[in-house]
Length: 250
Image (cartoon, rainbow, N blue to C red; front, side, top):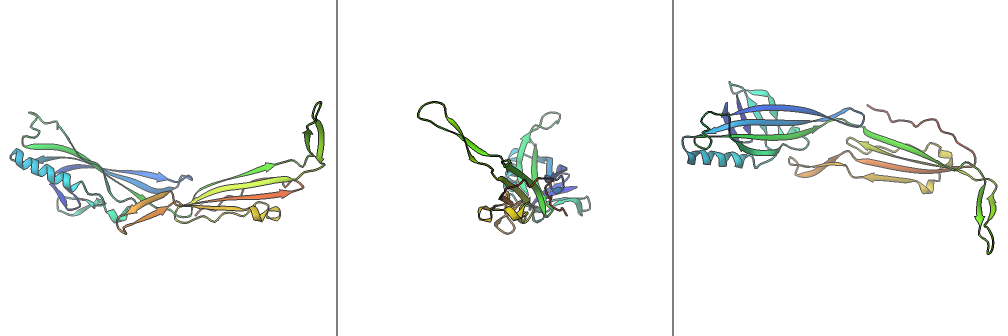
């Protein structure tokens, strides 16, 4: 078996590799990608200390670079299933742990005599999914139609109770927030469109929350953009409430 990172070749049996996949899920518990880690442990060998130092420097230089392809080959030099191409990831392949050197479990402890044991870790994330990723909405009902009253202050004595209006209106304030995987989610309409104060409507669009540097296109790219909405509605009789209309998921 042979592992390469970019143009750096660890050589046959030069590194042991652990490949780990961890699912990433949206608020509806649907898969929206994977977190992938390649963890390696290997040994550099040389005939003397100077040669070993040179090999260590080459290893360190190779892992100073992010966005390189990671490939595992079998003993016949054919690619295995464990290949991670930078172009196939969302975040790009990152060296989250550069080569870190340890004393290996070798008899005689020959570290830095003719060999050096090291570990490293690469990490990348993928993204999938489309449509709605998160949805939350609420309705505030303000007022009951009851009389409007107040206590009027007096120059002397206690404040006086006064009815200002025999009847008042009901206010309905509907607000919500939706997150899309790739695109902005269109806000739903008001629950009671016939009584909406259209001049008070509020719609807010936020930049994506998941923004990364795409090394392939040399630009920032984003996912998970947010839409927010707020509707103000007023009536002289109760409109009641039963349930929100939840979005359709595909």
